[in-house]
Amino acid sequence: MSSILGSFLVDPVVSIYLPKDAALAASTVDCISKNALYSEVDRFGFSGLLNYILYRKYVPKRAYCNWVHGWKWYKPIDPKMLGLTEKAIHNYFARKKPIVVHNHYQQKLLSEAGFTRVINGCLPYAYLSLLPKSPSRPINIANRNVLVLLPKSQYYAQKRKSFDEMISFVNSDRRLVEKSVLCVFADDIKRQSVIDLLSSQSVPFIIGASPFDLLAMLRIKKIISSFGVILTNTIGTHIPLAASCGVKVQVIPEIYDERSFSFIKDCWPSGELALPPNDYFEYLEFAYSLDFLKHNLGFLLNDDFWLGPFRDWGAREINGNQILRGQGLKNVLGWNSKGFARSITFSLLSRIT
Image 1 (cartoon, rainbow, N blue to C red):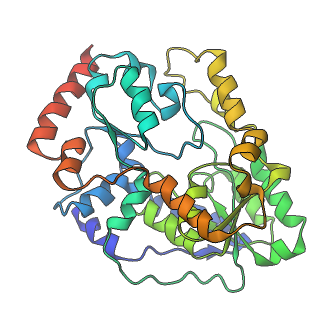
Image 2 (image 1 turned 180 degrees about the vertical axis):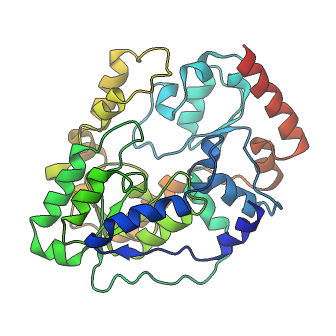
């Protein structure tokens, strides 16, 4: 792993594929997806990024904390909405393990649930700002200035219906066909059904993020920053990230995926003790609805907005309250003697109780 550290100063290679090369593109995913996942902090290369920022000599096998990934455009009412399992919520020692959240509301929610070390620390993408500036080779997008983000699936679910709807939307407008590049989640491109669908299109595509890619965050930021407009039919971290890069984002209301909440329910991990109560999913149904979007984030549906304030909004959503640095960050991660001793103790105790 140590030989990869220098990669953070190297511009990630990003290729645009023609539809006929879909099978070839799928074969390249495993070449870039080699980072082992031991905890949430390892996803999308975040632990490697933090390791480089802290000038360590190797990539640790794991970080001894939890870190909430993903932008929450709503106020979570349950710790599970922050990605925590039943065991983490109800285990006394697991609640003593450090967990990093994005704002004071999330901190209060978890503190009231019994978590004793809840730290404000921003979304992972905020830490890209701590990397030294380095030259970036532009992606050769020719005259294609629109990036169409296709909805991502999960490893335990089939391709989502909204994936097909987004491609149909692009094909319905000749100008979009000529100006667009599709962005496909790395895990989806390995599905034969996706390969077949992309092969039948006339629009080129690009491979997006993989949770196993050590350079995933650098790669996806480079992709987004290369385009002038982002089109999407789902809501997620890609929206404030693109806005913070100064890229115009528009959610397509006609095909907006309100089914995302039921997708979460249908794919609830089998390892959980039980499904949450109905009001949990009722709240998510409201948070994922087009009505919620219209009333709380209506500017995302508006084709005529001023980009300046939008960029500031994206930066605020990504950066949260504060970026952790130095010994404070090492202590949270368990990458110094004080943090390691405390975190490993509670990690081990949580496993045996």
